[in-house]
Amino acid sequence: MTKYLKALGLAMVAAFAFSAISAAGASAQTAGHITSDGPVGLIGTEISEASGGGPNKFTAFGSNVECDSVYEGHKENSTPSKGTKELISSGETSTTITPKWTNCNGGRHIDTRSCDMEISDATTTGGVAGTYGVLGAIECNTPGDYIFVDATAGCDVRVFEQTNLSGAHLTNQGGGHMRLHGTITGIHATTSCFDLTTTSASLHLDVTIKGTNAEGGATAVSISD
Image 1 (cartoon, rainbow, N blue to C red):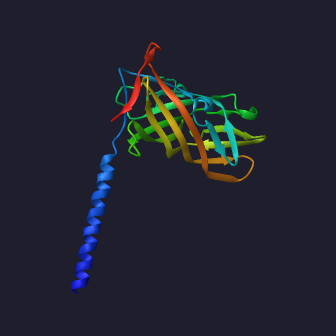
Image 2: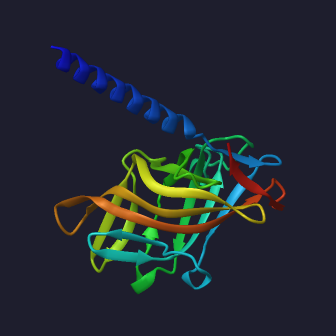
Image 3: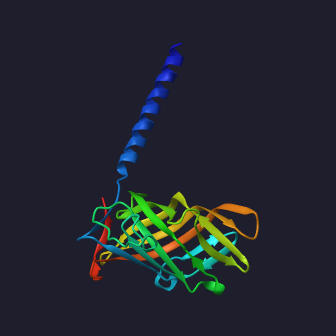
């Protein structure tokens, strides 16, 4: 009995210690906010691989679609597809981003239709100063709508609304810019050519994000605790 009680006591001590370590790790994560001198709009342009950036492409069903990419950020739920373009207040924790993809490889194209991306829930990750993991979502203004991707000849890929997409990060850059980078994984997609679905589609991003004020002038923007 004594040996059993000692073993039980050691197990309880280990459990409490593990709980304390876990709680400490959780508390070390802090939420990130978009910070600027005032209301701000966001313009994201891809960093070319020649300039040290990573790939900007959509991958699904064994096909890669690479396009020239521009991303325009607004206040959450405020997008051109909804007839509004409101600026983001300093201190906001999320933003709605309207992507524009043009000049895709092989004559392909991506049409976002009435859909936009949302970036939210920025939390510090990996102990790297100024870097925050974010969650992505796809939201469409028209019920049942989807992002259309002309992935292969005669076949299209459709990406419907979904949430909790992970893999992207926001990092502060010099000069009052941010960098949105990483690979958003676990994207649910379907294809018209086959009765198939996948949850392994991905969007690879490496984008510099700059801020603009109401007059269109440059405004420093960052992400901070």
